[in-house]
Image (cartoon, rainbow, N blue to C red):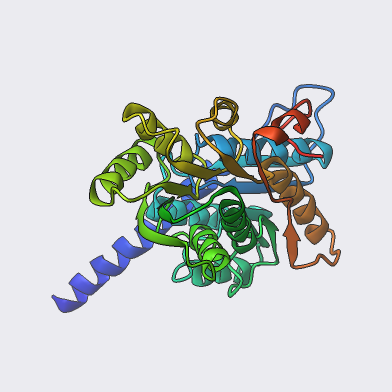
Length: 332
């Protein structure tokens, strides 16, 4: 009887694994139309795994990646959870690896998860690049994106320069378990630590949604009415913060600095409701990730770190923004 139970259990495990591999291959198996005389077989098949599929920021990463894929004759898949979800993110990467794609580009997850996951992928012979958020303790080949600690430090420096008197800061961060969000908070705190007039009085997470950014802002103001400045560390945080400040008539009394330059973010700066934002280059991140992956597949040496441009912009900087190039807002 014991042998029978063991045998059935073993069979179920084998079947489960077989189904996982089968559906992984189906999910990541590109079969383009070959009837066209202009069709050229792609040299490589890469997968870009996003933190959140319809996030405006990650769509810009996708645009850059697709442009590079077109130039370098690469079949590119853009995939990931519909909403930020660590378990789904991990499953998507594992499915891409099971399908034996030629390369995987993804955001580094939290430091408890990323190294082991990435190492398993690389040990299968599949190169892995981290985009936007690094996993330096893993076997990833390179990181492409913002120096997140430096970006947070710049935000802290901007707040010091832009404000006078006592400043009580509330921080709305994307996720507590996200490595890049942690670095942006750490850099900010280090920038302000020697100035006694500025202190962080509260911090909460928005789960990278505008709705929760607004909810956490409202709760923070209720619990800490002394807050007179906010720092949002993910793309939608500042938008949610300003939404609340507008509803209670406090936009002219509270300093706000955010992250990224979505069209709504720029509009808020122009309207004087948002004082500043940290500029990243998501389009360039996507483009460089595909380019570097091609170089890896060709056996070329690539450097470990590829930091894209980061700076803080205010209202006076808007006029020098050139948004005529595909991929959105670019700074000279």
